[in-house]
Image (cartoon, rainbow, N blue to C red; front, top):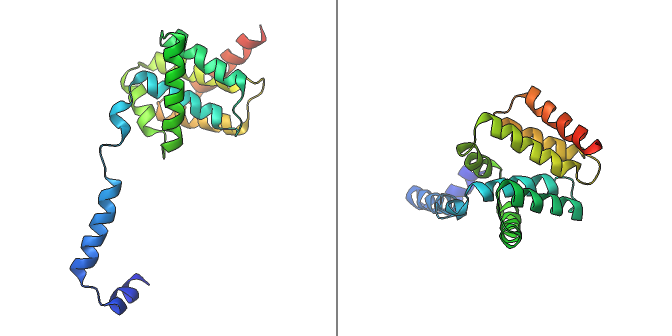
Length: 165
């Protein structure tokens, strides 16, 4: 189809190539907010991604994320609120999880990554039940963070047992 319409329009090869380069350059913009993503932002974005996975944003989940940011990242309430707002915006604009996971991976050890998976499970369990989509997102993040399946399951069990106590 492209070849046929290419010849019917009478455009030269150079014109088509120039047009394709122009289109591709728009996707190769390195000034996209990647520089604005630090560890805390990456972590917050992953927590938000789990919260949004089931299509519901509940108060319990928001409070859990805010408390996690206050405790784990040692932020004040105002800073945690601003970070949560920023993370929501970044997740809305993101096409994948890679930029968030990458920055978290760069700043954490294997043990700390398992702790982060537990934090994600805490968000999933915040409303009292884990939705299949939440499970899927956490499983995907765990894979990108090189957390073994056994550690992924153990993190889920740890969080489930701790909330029942």
